[in-house]
Length: 136
Image (tube, rainbow, N blue to C red):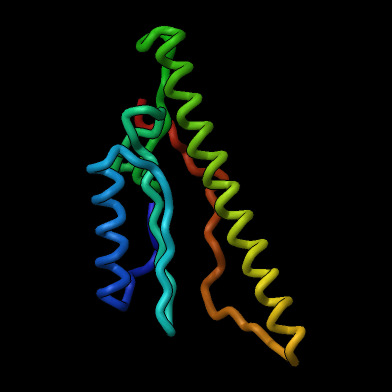
């Protein structure tokens, strides 16, 4: 899962590619954002051997979620779903921490004088309505 537009800065794109490589090679899941003075790029890598995210480049997000008990057995399916829940909880906590720290730092700066922050980034896309099941 990554940006819905081309990244202009090749160093940002290279950093995002390296992140995805490290996650894939290291059996890790996570997210990263990189910023220069003009743009921001982000990437998430979800699939790992210990969760139910499965890479699928044919889907809009590049992954699907699959852990069927009839294929894996109840114990193994539960293992993958718990790994998936761990990824989602960490993603939510990191996002909330990032937002709160950004607001805290903004408030600290505003104590020193007037500060107006204007974000020129496009609207954040939502995942609602996206089918993660893959083709039947």
